[in-house]
Image (cartoon, rainbow, N blue to C red; front, side, top):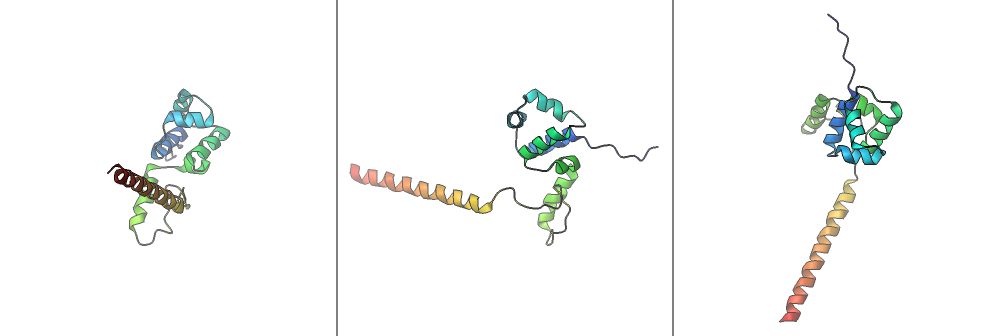
Length: 133
């Protein structure tokens, strides 16, 4: 009986990360300049050349190493650490880099701008109602 570990299936890892990102094959295909069928073939492949892997990693917002070392168990471990008081030393699905992929302040500003716009629209509507009376 062999104790050799099975090599990682890079295509399957790409598929899982893409799905976790909420991205369709077609969107990934357009981003790297190939057909949707090519992405389907890539996701069915155990190995991928480094140049293509780097392009895909860039589009998915992760490193090539993250794709190579990805595991579903790691994802669960990563998210489960948020319930623990000290998760700074956790080894999550995305390695040691537990950072946001977006700037939270940008999201707050975006929300504030939408709220201000909604208030402006309400004021315009109320002013219109007053003029009509």
